[in-house]
Length: 152
Image 1 (tube, rainbow, N blue to C red):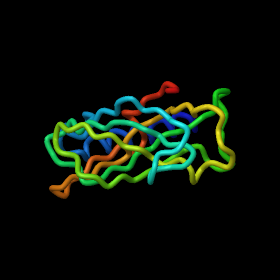
Image 2 (image 1 turned 45 degrees about the vertical axis):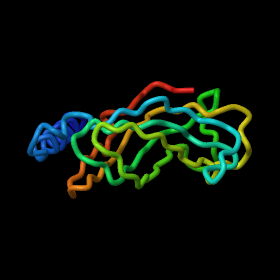
Image 3 (image 1 turned 30 degrees about the vertical axis):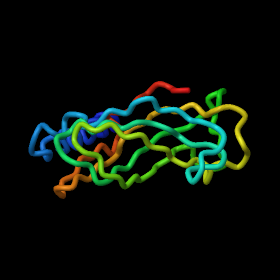
């Protein structure tokens, strides 16, 4: 009985979020993440030990002002490599024109307690929220458009 109530509650919330969209724009993914990878070493003014590199393509017809990205990192054994959480959330403020592809680096140094011997694996990578220059936004708080296989 409790499982049925939980399922119905989830279903109502999910359907309510779809109906509240107002358009089908919220049902499509307005971006493409390309070539996500962790690199070790140092990149001047970016990081000293490790950084997550990726390209983001704005697939919408609007200019992106900023976006919030989420991803998880693992060591080669599939374990959390940090003392704290391995879920990284980063807000990037950068204007990305419609159709443009831009390269980004996220500094991982604040999460590292020991210098890694090999690059981390990336999993569950997605954009949580996008703010556009026209004042509108797009949200994916649950990672519906995430990449779910470990990327080395």
